[in-house]
Length: 143
Image 1: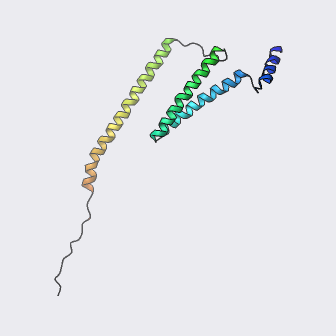
Image 2 (image 1 turned 60 degrees about the horizontal axis):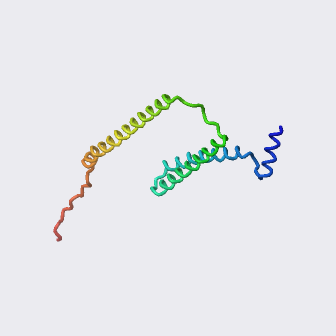
């Protein structure tokens, strides 16, 4: 009870409407959300300049998020998840790597098939295209 009153007094003195830890945690969550939004915008942008801008925003926001997380962890304001066995991490990394390779191969196959299909269909389209036949007019001599 006394500790809660002290926290309230500190908040009133600092002009804060919520405990510092809660405020920092909220900011940390917003930074993580922003990174997701920027990443989505990056992957959906068609213009190289816009894509570059969102890439830079993602990088700078990740940097801010990492710095805030480190600060909060040092101040014991952020509880990390329980430790994971290194074997489990290695297993997941291997699986993600394999999935990435399969995805890359799939994309390459589809791109090659698409190019081959176009090359095969182009002559077919050319052969099926018939130029309009103009009726030859017979010229009759003028009388």
